[in-house]
Image 1 (cartoon, rainbow, N blue to C red):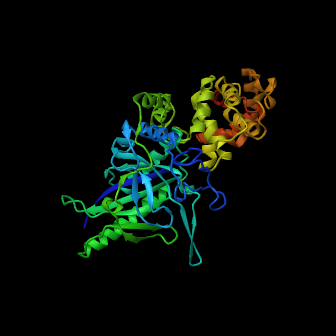
Image 2 (cartoon, rainbow, N blue to C red):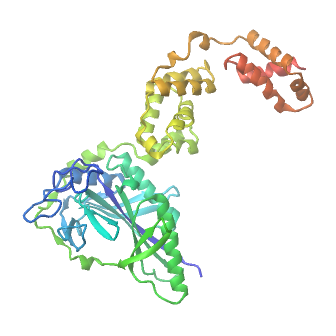
Image 3 (cartoon, one colour):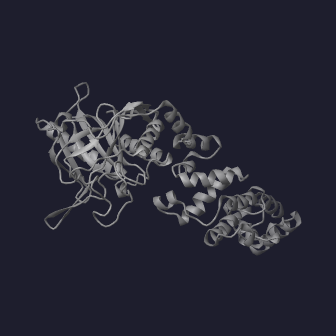
Length: 468
């Protein structure tokens, strides 16, 4: 029996503030357990929260980046639940007046995944289960979050992955968060339901805290299969909170799903309502950088192949390096080729590319690329030189001298071509017999003996003329 998927995603993103949302404790990742906390973020009696203004600015920044409207008037709410990772038995969040509403993220297909809301809240602590005991680390408690809630517009696991990846790229690009899923600074709760075409939507389940893009796809596939089996057997899906275990590649039920009424939301009495001025919103809007999709479009319009442009557009530091080199007169195509062909050879992981810590500057790369553009050196020679520059941090002049840049006269090239013919009689006969690939042997001889200076097209013309 065929079913249709209905999916929405709630994405929790830790903000890149230096301190927590309601106190002065550090938000730095790691540290010894329970060393990044204080009476406020551990909910001690009498401790009062003070809202971090930068958290509001970051939320506005995130909302504008995904086309949201900004609520000028907003407030915090208490979300009540009892769990060991939340010592005061309630979370300070937002309910009916979130900071951002009515946005969207556009997929490559042109489909828009609508965003219902973005609200700010505090993170909870972390539970560690070990040897039959459960330990609590409150270092993460009180770290500021935004929760981005999509509408149920997603209709395949692949769309879910693309939506989450685009959110990740956008938030990194505007400086809201590093969105490192492996460190928990971006986590996705995926809501899944299935139904037969033409029938009402089915009962949804929520898969909590998915921590990688690939796991989003796999968790959804497994939960869709589970729901299909239930419905095919004539049973009904129970609204539940689920967990995906990557080690066993399974989804399983954690608990029955709470509704909003269960949380008994009410306005947070210890924090005043706050006002976000239109002037503040416009100032933040004007400070936004070029967003990833706009950057990719610009690169394609520059004449770069889309597949190659996609290899750099999502890394903020890489694209700045690329743009700086091009702004100094280097051609876009040759600059891109050296980045993905040589620099990426030493920056192999996603984190390496995001950090982009290399010794060579954009100006140094531009000087090298311009030698290719002016046909003073060949691309292969440039790759060799760049590899040395990356290791040492030296300028191109440390590896290429005036003799290297001297051109090759036609007479010298013709003499090299004759030498290639004399040294390779079998290849000459093969060419005469119509085996054109044999000419590559000649090119090897010419390029080696010209130290990479020869013009291949001109050399081919001379070789064919000489062996007639």
